[in-house]
Structures are given as structure tokens and as C-alpha cells.
Length: 269
Image 1 (cartoon, one colour):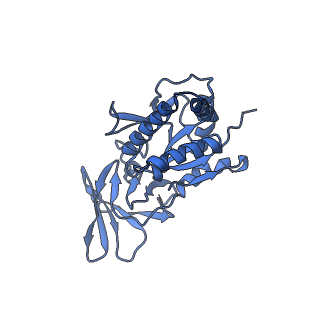
Image 2 (cartoon, rainbow, N blue to C red):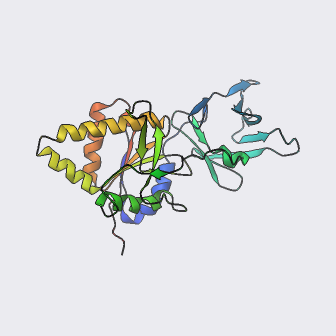
Image 3 (tube, rainbow, N blue to C red):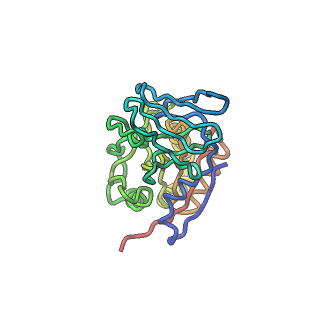
């Protein structure tokens, strides 16, 4: 069952850190931008991970070691680059986050940073214009713009942009996420307090099945697109988070792995 946690106003700056601290297992297979890499086992315990399309590149974890080494054999004089694992977050020697160990044991790696490959995507795709919504002054847009600097404090996702990912279950083949944490690849969906009010109004009418069906379809498509990436729903109030979480628990089908964080909207002064 997904975690439901409430953040006080004084804790808002910790949203990004909270996301990075999700439970993860020890590293095993690796996801290379949604391509599964299975480490080969050499000499009993050592693990070797070749990088598709780059025969000179590989990751290596020696027997009994805890630090991965990134090798570039195109330059025999270059020493291997260490990758440190701290609670599932992978960093390079400069402390920059370059990957995230996922709950399944797989990982998301920013090979562009690890190997200085300028033609490689990062952990998040390039944000694109969001699907048509309620407009810049709406409660949902204000809530999005309030949360985005908390997810990526150094480089927030611009207003009106979202992240489109391929989804095998989506009718149009793609689904959107409101944000993506650039240091970890964690995906976010935002539900403002206004969404909760809309749900409450739907309960008083005949539209509740439609609201629930739309949410179930959205979440199914998001999980299909996310693969092993963690998915977090941030809600503007606890009642909205509980409603959605209870629905996901009833319907299940993988939705129980979605985590929830309650972050009340704070109007800028």
C-alpha cells in the first residue's frame, strides 16, 4: 500500500528529499531509459553492465564492493569514475545525483552525466506544453506553480509545461505527469484542493462514476508509462488524498504502489 504523509508548511522545502528517500532495494538489473539491462555475473560476485550503443562503456561492481565504477575504454588512460550509493541515491565524485535505485532493484541512470554523453537524455524527458486545462489563473495551475519549485528547487519546470511519456495502455499512446524530479526521475501528479471539491460535488450528482473512471484510467496509464519509476500524487488536502488512495486500494491493479503526500497550498505574498 502506498505511503500517505502530510507535510506542514515548515516542511515544504523537504518535498524533494522526501521523494528521494522512498524505500529501495539493493541494485541489481538497471533500466537504461526504460531499457532493461541485466548485469552479467563474473568471478562469482562481480557485476558487469554493458551500455547499449556504446561498446566502450560499462559499469562494474566488484565482489564485496559497494561503489560502482564507470569505465570508458575508449580512453585507456582515464581512471574509472566512482558512483556512490546513499540510501538508493547514486552520486558521482562531485556529489551530483546521477541515478536512483528503484524498489524493484532496477535503477535509472543519467548516462549523460556519468560519461559526459551530450546526446543522451537525462532522467526526465524534455517538458512540453501541457494538455488543455483550466488556464493560468485557475486553482489547479496555481497549485502546480506552487509545487514545482519544491520538486526541482534549482531548475523548476516552467509554468504550463508537463512531461509526456509513452504509455502502452493509453488510447493515444501517451500520458502526462505534472512534474518529474530531475535528480531522480521520480514522477509526480498534482491534485489541488479544488479537485477534492469537484469530487465532493460529483458525489451529490450522477457524475461520480465518471470522475472515478477518469482517475482510474489516468493512473493506469501513468503506471504503464512509469515502469519502475516511483509515482507520487501530491494533494492539496488530506481528504482528497484519502479519497484517491481509498479508490486505488479498492481497485488495486498496481495502484497500491502510488505514494501520496499532502502539501497544502500557500499563497504567495
